[in-house]
Amino acid sequence: MNKDNLLSKKDSAKYLGLDEKTFENYFKNAKEFPYAKTSGRFTFKKSDLEKWLESYRWRSIKLNIRDYALCLDFALAQHFRGYVLSDFGTGRQREFGQKITNWVKGQLAEVAVKKFLKINFGVDIQLDFRIYDEIVPQDIIGIKKNGSYRDPKVNVSIKASKPKSAFLVLGENEILLTERRSDIYIFCRPDIPDDHLLRITRNEIIKLIKGQQHFPKYKKIIPRFDDIPCEIAGYCGIEKLRRVKEIPGQPFDGYRFVRESGLLLKSKKDWEALIKQL
Image 1: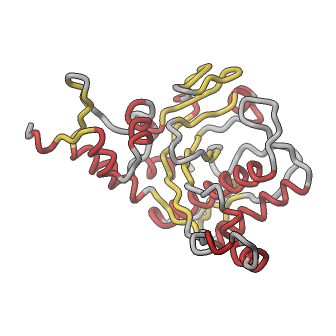
Image 2 (image 1 turned 90 degrees about the vertical axis):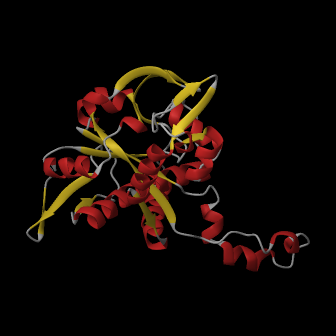
Image 3 (image 1 turned 180 degrees about the vertical axis):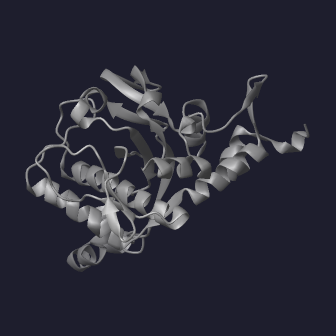
């Protein structure tokens, strides 16, 4: 093999537009890329990276301000009805910003899947953004056929995590309790900025503080709202999840069910197979 077709870890990360830490997490833990290790050095085939990048691009969806508004409305409705959201794996209640961000992130993932299936496969799915007292495990509640929606043939749950997350992670109750279990789990990585609330209130904040002492120092760098990219990382059936007590760098307080993002089904043929199941 021509050595010119091999890239170092640093050059591979740069080629894909990822920081080195994320790239290392992706190939070591997520199993997103094949690699070789010789004399302590990791090397990657450029052809493998190109294949991943091409796949990543067609699986990534842009979410606009209208999509965000739909999700923020849901998040605020959950907050003001007094719903308690705890940190994953602990009993500690999350503060307002964390709660809103996580709810928005979860709903953005659902909207992204809806857009992804429509744009790439011409399939219309129905999501349920109503508020319930009980947890509703199934996120796709209808498939459009002949002008009307029918019930899905399989139960599908859509999960969201940060762009750097290497694993689809599910709580034990989500799998062991029959009423919360799904047949298929779709994993998404929406890249929602931590300061999204600042971005949508930017103009009001500027009006409020423009006469203050330090405002001139940062007035030109207050971020604006941009479209939010979301990668549809792939999906798997419930039978592909494995039960563990930890993943690299993250011990759990109990068991979780996980699947590496690189092992998820994500090709066009894979998605066409899922659509047939729906």
